[in-house]
Length: 381
Image (cartoon, rainbow, N blue to C red):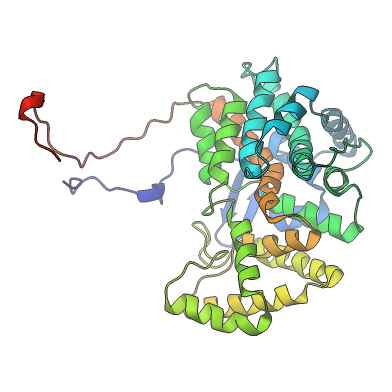
């Protein structure tokens, strides 16, 4: 049974416009991702991530006075409760950090007395709380797994500096922090991607913001979405050496194996963020003696573009950049959450401004209607 000819099925909702949004857009004529009209590469170059978060929630970049007030509010919310720390200690040590983070964010909703308040003012406060607490959760979870004591956040540090402090116990060279901060800006927002659409769908039922973010985390975990940055690094480690890269990619293409970090549903001529994030990745390689990863990626990229006409996406340079910073691979996607919480919550608040319950239709292709037979007359399938 197939769909009637007059009904067009858009698998994966490809090409479907379900709503309007002012948050971000990829301008085809310049192949540039923008947040409220600002090119993302210029934001990464000239702004810290906190300024970008403010932009996504307010529609304009902050003045110096506004930024100071915003940072004061965010830094005051960084600590997590002793109860949540105890919850983190109960998890299996081999559970994926995205699973523990998903549960921890849901727990934040249980703790928050404003959880059920869907007003824009309350949702903005909750968004700031999640932005402040998620890095603390990720770092605490990592250290608990290692049998180490969680490190409390420091209010005098920027978000990027503070995450390094809580994770490693020290803040690295300013160039490393700059690379990390830029990656957060590049990851912050990207239209109606799978996880953002999940968040908007959940909140369209008038469920609360924590439920929407919990669902978005579950969507982001998948290797076809946020988990791709982890998969890229696993692929590079499998190749191992520059001398093996060409044979590996030739074999992958000849046998139609999945090569991670290439292609994008929005971009056709290459992800606009990639050249700029690649610059930061190369900076990391110089600092951390990681030139072989640059060489391997160059071989993979040139061969894939030449033979398939498909360009790398943002995960391609981000994976090895995070690896060179010293982060363990399962932490890569939770770091994505540190950033994308801003885009998710911007879309959640936008959805609620003019909400309509998400309820698409499906075309039935099962068996025709039939009567229920008594059990004595049923045949084994």
